[in-house]
Amino acid sequence: MTDSIILQVDQIVKRFLNHTTVAIDQVSFKLMQGEILGLLGPSGCGKTTLLRLIAGFEQPSVGTIELAGNIIASPYEVIPPEYRNTGMVFQDYALFPHLNIANNISFGLKKKKLSRNEVKQRISEALALVGLEGLEKRYPHQLSGGQQQRVALARALAPKPSLILLDEPLSNLDVQVRLQLRHEIRHVLKGTGITAIFVTHDQEEALAISDKIGVMSYGKIEQFGTPEEVYTHPSSRFVAEFVTQANFIPAKRKGKFWITEIGQWEAPSSFENIAEGDLMVRQEDIMLHPDDTGEIVICDRQFLGREYCYCLKTPSGCQIQARTSLQTQLLIGTRVKLAITPHSPQVFPVISFKTHKKKEISLLPM
Image 1 (cartoon, helix red, strand yellow):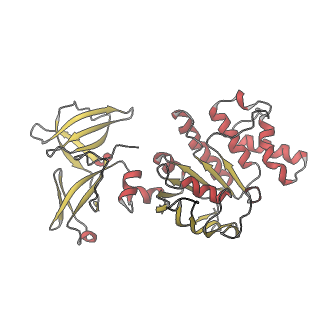
Image 2 (tube, one colour):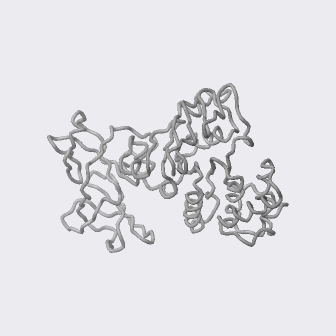
Image 3 (cartoon, helix red, strand yellow):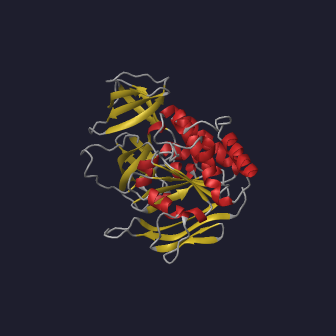
């Protein structure tokens, strides 16, 4: 990876006619050569609209988008998608059913003015990258969903674009195929050195594929950073809820400690001005120890293959979730005491959720 900036999005705003709220609200970020950005967020947060602005299907109301040193979008001019040197991979593959695989891939090469031999070579190279050598003469209906998405990726790669945009490309696939393809997509993109933006609402997918993550909410980027930064140090409660599998437990400050009904933690100096809030405790940081004198009771248990997810009821009637390895096998109704993996606690201001149950203080994994 070089230090050159490939994509620069500067203060982008998008307003649609007859809409009172903005779809994209002052979004700015930079991507370096070869970086993969995951745009993560719930439905309606603006991630696909932002992708369409970068692709050229929408025009910004305010701000500029610069690709490889050239301005490609502003409120005053927009370079058409076909002249932006970008590739696009859609959720539904968007392959031409009447064309074979070779012709589907070569479709994106028509404006390159390549010789027949160069086109043939590009097709072979693209198919080799996605592991579909020898399938040039097949048609889309003769391939599985995973193979069709590989063809769509090969078609985007063949013109050798500066940037590839992927709009939830794995959402239509079975779980096992998704797991395999997300690894393959990252491997292919890193191997070619092409910069990419990957839109998803799946936090695990974003963490696995991306070099950088932009978590979006209501048209804004709430946090932009590496997967490790976003997961371990969420900048807002929204990010903490959406990206991590965390519980939020009411806590009050007493001297140097945060006091909760499941235990107490030393309070870092950065929280000196906060008297109370919700303490974030990730599910995987909770360890369970059976104890007949314990005040916390296991009210449900789910077997998830590699781990168990326990639902715990606290003395106040609140529910929290804990994830453990298969070595921890406890029955529903077991009284337990909790131990928390040592870490600096993170506290967020108390907010109310009208749509949540009165005593529900945890969020189930998304």
